[in-house]
Image (cartoon, rainbow, N blue to C red; front, side):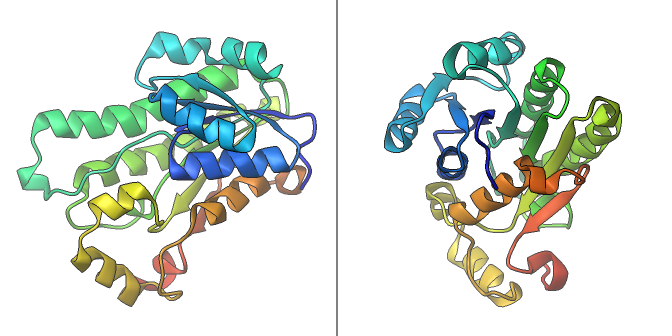
Amino acid sequence: MDLSGRHVVVTGGGGAIGAAIGGRLARAGARVLLADRDPDAAARAANAEGLHAAALDVTDEVACDRLPDLARARIGGLDGVVHCAGAGMERPVIETDLADWRRMIELNLTGTFLVLRACLRAMDRGGAAIAIASTAGERGSARRGAYAAAKAGVISLVQTLAIERAPTGQRVNAISPGPVATPLTDAMHSDETRAAFARRTPLARYGRPEEIAGAALYLLSEEASYVTGHVLHVDGGFLGAGIMA
């Protein structure tokens, strides 16, 4: 899966999954720009892999619309985008206040809309886009209502974009991870949550960021040239056999 000559933006590039994706794509030959609202985190991740870094707030429409020009200036073009930026929250729905609900929708769904819209407008025929969704967006998940609703919206948006952009030759897909071991999940997941995932995931472990990166590499590559509108589950079998209650 060779990405030589390709130019890819990875949002949320300062996080564990975004950084892993950026590094994997670069090792496959792509020129990669890691964009993150924390420019220091993006720079650290970029420096570790010899990549480029930039600041980006995915809820800022103007900044997102400028992203393609930034990519051309920093890495010489834009052929692909992997949208990883987002945030999680664990709280029962009836205890979720409106401000937190709006924050989850804005960061996870509106940010996806803004980034994908800007990049798909700018990419030539044959470009590819990936959004990171979640198994929470496909099955009920206690204490994750706002996050799950946003990620369900991401999946629907991706499927719609795949239909709309097919005449241009652009492909749009989603990756739906199960639990992945990152500093974010270390902070968010309780012992109860960890035990539930271990019991109900056939592979009985959390995923690794590198495993999400491998899926992204596939979906951006020519090996996936007939794949669009797809939700690729990288979840240890959780959706096939598990349930969160």
